[in-house]
Image 1 (cartoon, rainbow, N blue to C red):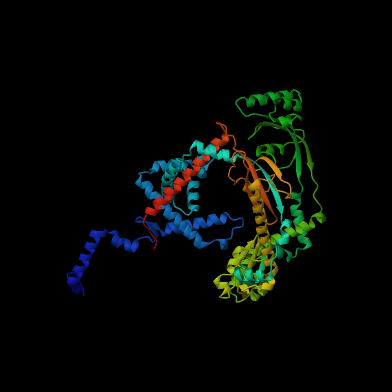
Image 2 (cartoon, helix red, strand yellow; image 1 turned 45 degrees about the vertical axis):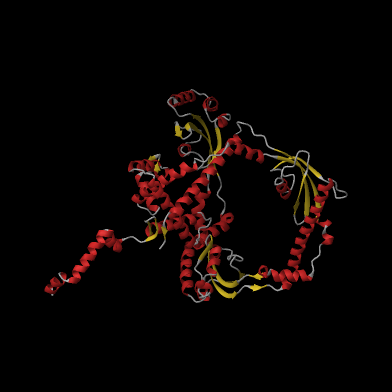
Amino acid sequence: MLQDIRENAQGTIAKIIIGLLIVSLSIWGMDAIVGGFSGEPEVATVNGEDITEREFLRLVQMESQRRLSSMETPDPSMLNEDQIRADVLDSLIQQQVLIQDANAQGLELNDADIDSLITQMPQFQVDGQFNRDRFVATVRNMGMGVGEFREAMRKQYVVNQIRAGIAQSGVVADQNARQLLQIQNQTRTFRVLSIPATMVAGGVAVSANEVQTFYQENSGLFQQPERVDAAYITLSLGALAETIDITDEEIQAYYEERAADLASEERRASHILIEEGSDADETMATIQERLAAGESFEDLAREYSIDTVSAEDGGDLGYAGRGIYDEAFEEALFSLEEGEISEPVRSSFGVHLIRLDDVRQSEVPSLAEMEDQLRRELARDRAQERFAEIRSQLADSAYAADDLAGPAEELGLEVREATGITRDGGQAPFDHAGLVRQLFSEDVLEAGYNTELIDVGDNVSVVARVREYHPAEQLPLEEVREDIRATLTARKTREALADRADALIADLEADGQLEGEGEWTRYEALSRNASDVGPAVMQQVFSMARPEQGDTAYAKAVSDNAASVIALEQVTDGEVAEDSTELEQLQQFLASLEGQREYAAYQQYLRNRAEIERP
């Protein structure tokens, strides 16, 4: 056999294979051979550079955690995984485009620069000093290695340099900012004539034929959405606690255990507080000598204490229990005998002399007074232990079961029913979006499985299944007739009000006079934010063109209940001082907006030029 191998190795086939390898290596290099076996999978390629699957999946996980942490009640079922993956991939592509641009411009950070940045970051410091252990732990909690984090910083920093350079280059002309501020601070003088809906109500009528036509032409508005009837089991800590029996002996033992905590001690203290400093010890020694000589603690507090509030009362701080004062102050106070004065005590506020003036003990409530509260606390503590266990059992049992009756019977829970649940939800617990999404998922709606066990609140979990599915259907005309009539009546009323206002405006523009149309209300020099007039009228007033000097411009504002004829008489631009802080802030804001627009356009330009491939 060995002879055969030798002969074949020198034969024609072997020579062809070796020749192909030589050609491959000469054209594509060793990576063409080795990379085909050991290359890391990629999710996209930008201008020939890969975005690896490992980096992509790590960022997907980080983004998922970020979105969960931003929820008031974190719920993984509320995450849209497809959207997260799409958003992360898009951001990685954009980042790669920007990094390549930064490299092309020769922007880079060396290792010393990165070390300097890392050691200055507050999240990696302990007591104001860089702590390597915290740095490594924080980076690992982010799902990264130290090397990966350093490389990510290197890339992001140079990208930020370009972003800052472009964003901060935004420029806005002073005159533009001044003109905008003048418009913003503008006032307008105008009159308003109101036309109530009652003035046109007599000419508004809706026929049965119009209702029928509207129903037919807008059938999509009168659809009963698809809905389901569901069976569900709720497991709650509160309900579980109500099923737990607590004996009188257990209450008595718990009461005795809690008695020490229920009794509280409060101490009344006075103090003299001086500032910490080079002469603090000398000053405190002087105060102690004068106290020893018989001078009043109260008088010395008024003379020396920098706590001016208590000093007025001779240093009196009143009664307080533990957990109120600085730790060092509290420790000293609760070690004193009544009437005793402490040695100097240093705290974050300065140096104290503390005198204990009085001690009072609060009475422990009787067992009869505390019984109901203690019983609830004990039951809830016991239920907490059982809740996690039963929740796990319910999740496993419901996952394997063909219905909910079995899991409910096994765990002593109740199967309830809910009807008319749409994709927008229903009554609790189906006001929880994650539970509703599962209820309408393919596995549950079509395959007939139970939902997963979903946490819909604090210590409240629900599993559900579809009992019956009702497809979307057209509502009959009889059920919606009056709604349609009301809609058409409102529409015709608005049209009649608009027509009436237009007719009045035409008369005003013709001769400037109206007879018997009600009283005008005049508003003098109102600003945009004035609340004297309704928002619809104010919006219309400030959208009207400036009238010529001495002329009046007319317009209308129409709502369901009234129309308003507006007569704009005068527009006065706001005054802007040369050194106005408001003007300076507006200039900065507009320049920032312009810089952001320029950077967004630059990003899009780079993106459009890039060659992007997605497998």
